[in-house]
Image (cartoon, rainbow, N blue to C red):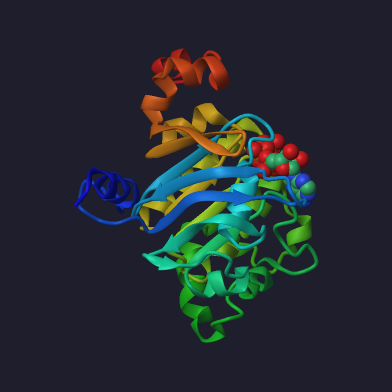
Length: 265
Ligand SMILES: Nc1ncnc2c1ncn2[C@@H]1O[C@H](COP(=O)(O)OP(=O)(O)OP(=O)(O)O)[C@@H](O)[C@H]1O
């Protein structure tokens, strides 16, 4: 093998986690955008290993939400590729991805307001209605508060409760990967904390999670690994602690974050 071939192989080799496992979800050099000729993602790459909680942070407009939408087939991918369990899923539509085990919770308009909680959950399982009873039981275990209120219309719920319904609906298909777009947005600090803890609990059931967050400090505290996006590319990556302690990341995005983390805030 020539030195050149060895370099190419090293660059394209599939990474493995400490247990020797390949990524569940892998995005390599993604280019994507909304308007012709203007890319919002510019060569963005992320790896999600089995059972990981991945945090995506970065300044406003960096392309965080666009990355999730591209992974979920909602924004056209112009370059690069995405694999799920090693299978190429680049450009597949959202309904196909749901069948394959990818769940997505958008930041806004993520419940059907005129439907009850239970009807919202049923909508999440319309591809496999026979599993309804079994999945409802599993979901109500993670979200016990939804059990007693399953007849209540989602439109009458608070922001935090709607967020729970939206997450629960995405979990109805028992996904292996869950994509969460700013789950804490617009919630009070207490409700934000509840949302982060619930996210961690869902992750502990074995679901790999990619979470975009504005609340970078909390996000880095609970995630296994994070990526800092800047101008559509993955500028930095590391464990939550590594990123929180990285002087470049602190200077560019986090301000006083490192001290807050040290203080356990
Ligand atoms: N539907 C759209 N059509 C055209 N441009 C869009 C659309 N949605 C987002 N953009 C643009 O894409 C860029 C990245 O937006 P995106 O929402 O991905 O950023 P973000 O990192 O999630 O930022 P924020 O934290 O502000 O939500 C922004 O310049 C935004 O204006």
